Every structure is written in structure tokens, then in C-alpha cells.
Amino acid sequence: MRMKTIPHYYDYNSAEPFKAAILEIRHLAAGTSAVTLDATIFYPEGGGQPADRGAINGVPLLNVIEKDHEILHIISRENAEKLAPGIAELALDAERRRDHTVHHTGQHLLSGTILRMTGAYTLSMHMGDETCTIDVDIKDLPAETLVAVEDAAQTAIEEDHPVITHLCPPENISAFPLRKQIPHVDEVIRVVEIQGCDFSPCCGTHLRSTGQIGVLRVLGAEKYKGMSRVYFIAGRRVLRDSRLLRRNADIVSRALKVPVAETGAGVLALLEKISKHEQKLKFFQEGDAMRKAKSLAAAFSGMEKTGGNPRVVTASFMDADMEETLRIGKAAQSLAPAVLVLASEPEIKFAAFSSVNGFDLRPTLKTALDANHGRGGGGPSFFQGVFEKLEDLHAFMAALR
Ligand SMILES: [Zn+2]
Image (cartoon, rainbow, N blue to C red; front, side):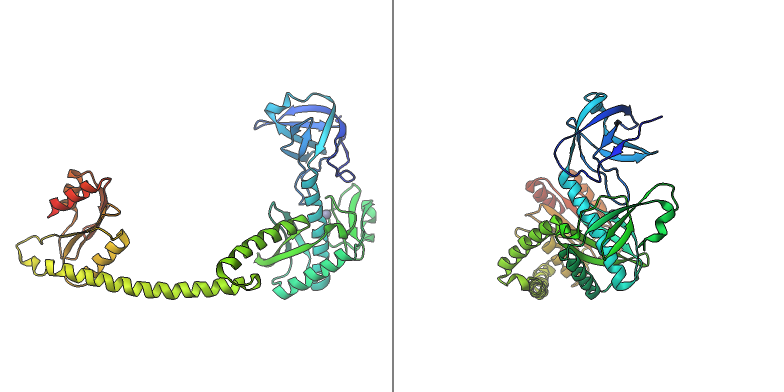
């Protein structure tokens, strides 16, 4: 029979090394190995709380899981040979643990507060690297309710309510006014009480009192499968988040020359101004394209009359990019049926247009492209191409003429 690992993760949260004995090192699939210990300070993944990280004799933990009543400390297969049965030093990533403990305790407080204020139960929780969420059994949580919940939770943090863990035999569980129901079990149940706020069965790690949460921010809520998903952060994550937001707000404030409190309105006003400028710019660009198109028009007037094939009108623009070149081509086409090949010298590209009935651009252009090291593609009435060298574009345009 396998020896049971004594859990010390509920009472140990320090970065100071902890001595325990390695019992066994077992190879698992997928290049990993599992270490079992006679006692552990590492919390195994469970109850919505991610597993601890840390090291055993300097070998980093990839994960900690509980499987078939065994706690497995997962390490990489290549590191397995660095460990052997016997006494070892366990080192906990205490900062990560504290972050999880703060958010787990914060979650109880938040769920208890939402239940008290709205009557809605929390059905699940998730602790992410960036934000944590709870899914609350209520269709809608308006912004003003979230603010009221946040304020009430902060009051409970300031009042520093004790957090007490009760170890309850399953037959006595009905003595507790539990926030969530639990499946029937044979083992002792851990009931976590935030005095005056909440009772909840939970196997995670918790703080000694709500004051240690420090601060809890409700970031927002969204509708999710008929429920509300509430996003929150607590403790130092609030500090990091605030620093990041302030840094960004300061940049916007300086750039727009408005106070930080008015940056939102400032950005919206700027966007509206840009939109007006863009409309004006479009008007001028189209006017300019039409002027250039009209000067081309003289060249193609009456060209359909020169026999079976229309003549091809070519023009190279030395200072127009492709966007402008395309604008000129479209404007020219609106004037009269024509076959146009227009080149943008800065981009070493061309665009060809045909509005002449039954005329296919492709055969002529492909021959000229192949002869001058160009690449391109398109259909019978619109075709585009590109060259590596400007002299190839020049030779291509000369060939068409
Ligand atoms: Zn908990």
C-alpha cells in the first residue's frame, strides 16, 4: 500500500526551505516524471485553484496534481535523474501562492457579497494569470450594482473579518448555512467561513482574515450562457493594474494636453476630428484624381476607331503611390471606355483597366510581363503587376506603347 502524503500546504506559505522525504520517482508519459513525498507544502491543482510552483532540491515543478488519493509532483523526465529517494529540500514559489490565496479568499468574499445583495449564487470560478472570474446565476448585473458590490466587499476588507476553517464530518454538514451544495462524501469536509459574510465548502488555501486581501476590484461583468461572468482582481494585482493604467493614461494625457480624468473624452474628440479631416482629404484626393484623369482623357479620345483592337494608353506617375494610381484609373474609366495601363514608379507597380467591351487585358500584359521579369495577375478588365527593378517597369511600359 502506498504511503499517504501529509499535506502542509494549508499551514505553510513561506519561501523558506522545507524538509521532506522523496518516496518514489515514477516515469510518466510525455517526457515527465512524478515525485511522491512523505509530506508536501505544494498545493495540488483543485477547487478552481491552480497548483503551486517551486522546486525539489532545485528541480523546478511543472505541476502538482492529486490522482487516486496521491499527490504527484510533476517534473521533466530529464531532471528526474537529479533526484533520488531520501531527504530533500522543498522550496515554494511563495509569491505565486500568496496571489492564489488572496484571489481565492477574495472570491469567497465577492461571491458571499453578491449573494447577500442580489440573491444570486456563484456556480463556478476560474483563476487566470491576468484576471479571475466567477459565473453568477443572474441574467444581468448592471454597472451600478457592481460598484455597490465592490464597495460592500471593500468595507468587509477594512473591517478585517476573520477567516475560519471548520473540519466537519459529513453527517454534520447540514449545521452550516452553506452558499453552495456539495456532493455526498465520506471524508471530512473543509468549510471555510468568513465571519459574518460567507460559509463555503472549499479545499483551497485561504488568508487568516479579509484585511489581508488588501483591495478587491470588480473589473466588469458580461452575459454568459444565461448567467453573468464577473471579472475581478485583488491584492497586488490591483496595484500592478493601476500602475499600468496610470502609465497609459499619462501618455494620453500629455499627448492630448488634457487632464488624466478627461483622457476618455479627449480621445473621442480627437477621433471625431480625424474623421472630419479624412472626409475632407478624400474629397480633395478624388478631385485631384479626376483632374489627372481628364488630362489622360485627351490621349484616349476616339481611340476605339483605330481598327479592331483599342489602343492602349499608358502613363507613369513619378510621385503617386498605388493607392493614388488606382484612384486616377477609376476616375479615368468613369469618363469614357478605355484601356489604361498606369504605373506607380515609387512602388514599381502598375494597374491596368479595360472598360472596352470584349477586350481581354491578359494576353498582351502577360507577354510584356514575361519579357520584362515582372509578376502579376488579374482578370480581363483589371490586372495588376510588380517589378523588382525600375528599368524593367520602364521597358514594360515602353513595350506596351
Ligand atoms: Zn476557497
